[in-house]
Picture 1 (cartoon, rainbow, N blue to C red):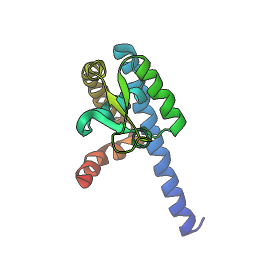
Picture 2 (cartoon, helix red, strand yellow):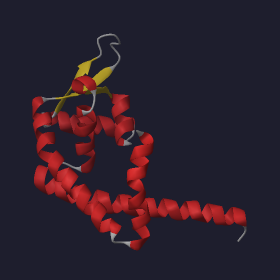
Picture 3 (cartoon, one colour):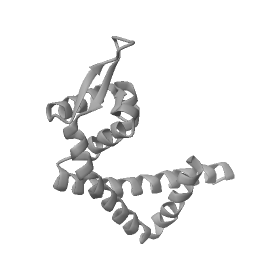
Picture 4 (cartoon, rainbow, N blue to C red):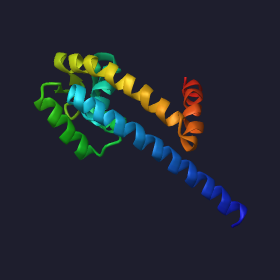
Length: 150
């Protein structure tokens, strides 16, 4: 194996480590959010993303990017959340083709109930991951990534 091959393997190992950490965290979040708040991780992500926007609304394309879903999967997800009364869609005033998705009062209330569950579960999952030698270095790097992005 040459130097170039070694670099590829290092990046591939980094990717596998990131995927393992993501899988561990997402699995814990899914179980906790479902049992405590009747939300999936991606449903929570939608409510959370909307709550962080001025006016609590986003265009559908923005929401798709925030959730890492395709446009059609985002539409199905929004339909489900809208059927549950957690969000609503409104036409964009300056572009009649544009549609915003907006949190309802029920969506805000459920998010406020779910956020402590999410945060406690995330903290617990990261602490558990910290105890796994293969994941500890990545967990240690997370605060530095946040500081760099700020």
